[in-house]
Image (tube, rainbow, N blue to C red; front, top):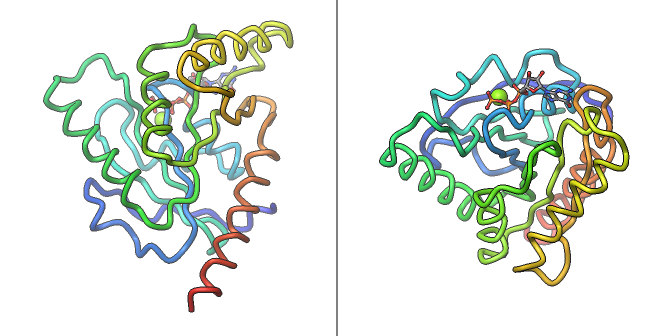
Length: 206
Ligand SMILES: Nc1nc2c(ncn2[C@@H]2O[C@H](COP(=O)(O)OP(=O)(O)OP(=O)(O)O)[C@@H](O)[C@H]2O)c(=O)[nH]1
Ligand SMILES: [Mg+2]
């Protein structure tokens, strides 16, 4: 997929105020510092697109970007911030759960996992929640340029072993690097295929 245009559209706290659900949408989420902004900027070949619209660790907003006038990329702020109150965290989680379960045009969510960090209980339970809700998602291991090929393989194996306590099979995953662009083509191919399914779905329901 060639990225012809990528523009920030809006930031919202409320699902009802998000842009009209008339285009296929893909969300990106992960714990703070996982490399989400870097990966989004690499995907869209824009230097500072994802960073400019959000204040890391502070404002928790649903950020919409319109790509190629065809699909939305949604940057969801990270979970796992240390310095927020329980009440704030609950409010944030409720907003995210509502968005993820009720946004009708949401085709897929990319759940980012730092390949250098041991599996975290909060990541595992977040992924399990997707399973329970039967929401489509893809795991993306980030920052793999910092590890050897063998170390990446052990990191994904360790994560998969944790998930297999709850899952029969390891859910689909990609390995990525914002530094080298690894994984970019796979992610964009999944989006392109989602876009064409979405188009077919719309034309069948006209
Ligand atoms: N080597 C390497 N470093 C990366 C990669 N992706 C991100 N980083 C670094 O990791 C740090 C966090 O990256 P961000 O893209 O800001 O992460 P984020 O998830 O958006 O973080 P917050 O929005 O602050 O929660 C930065 O110092 C990046 O330069 C990568 O693929 N490889
Ligand atoms: Mg960020």
